Length: 264
Image 1: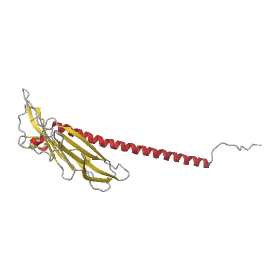
Image 2: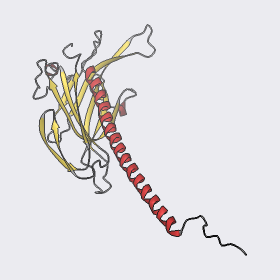
Image 3: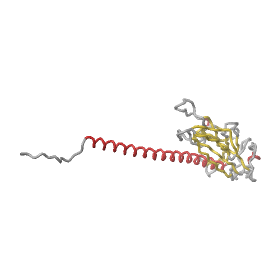
Image 4: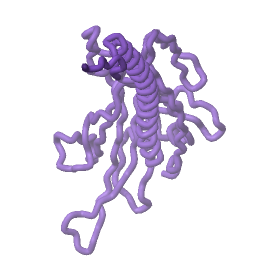
C-alpha cells in the first residue's frame, strides 16, 4: 500500500504573484532613483558646459584685446586714417555690443634674400547677430544672439575682405558662440572710471586701460521644470531684460587689461 506524501515542498501561485509584485516595486524604486540621479547629473553637466563655453570665448576676446594697438618699432607702413585700436559700438536696446580691435603684424616677404619683412594692419571684429536657431515648439527663432568673429586687413587704401584676398589669416563671419543673451563692453580709464561715451578716435582709445566684459549665455534646452524669473544684470547696472521661462542663464564677467595702448 502506497503512502500519501502530505509535505511536498514548493510555492503556490499566490506566493509567486506576491514575489512578482514586490520585484516590480523594487525595480520601480530603483528606476526612479536612477532617473533622479541622472537628471541631477545632466543639470550639473549642462551648467558646466555653459560656464566653460562662456569662459573659453571670453578668454579668446581678452587675448585679442591685449593685442590692440600693437606695432613693431620698425614698422613704418601707413596706418588707416580711421585707426582706432579699440572701438566699441554700444548696442541700442539689444544688449549686444560690437567690438573692433586693430593691431599690426609682420610676415617674411616670400623669396626675399636677405630676409625682409612686410607689415600689415589687421582688424578683428566681434559682432552680434540674431540667432538662426528655430525653437521646435514655437517654430520661431529663439530670443538670443550669436556672436561672429571676422578679421580683415588694411591694404594701404581700404580694408580688404577675404573674398578679394589670398591672405589665409583673414576671414569673415565665423560664428564662435550661440545662445547669447547679452554681450556688454565697458572701456575703463587709468583712474578706474568708465569712459562714456566710448572713444571713437585714436587719442580717446589710447586712454583705455581696461575693458570690462560681461557675457550672458543661455542653455540650449530647458533646464528647470517650472518657469523661473530672471533679470539680466549688466556690470552692476540693471538692464531692461527680464525673462520668465525654464532656461538657465550664466553670466560671466572678466576684465581685459590693455598693454599696448598709448605706445604709438
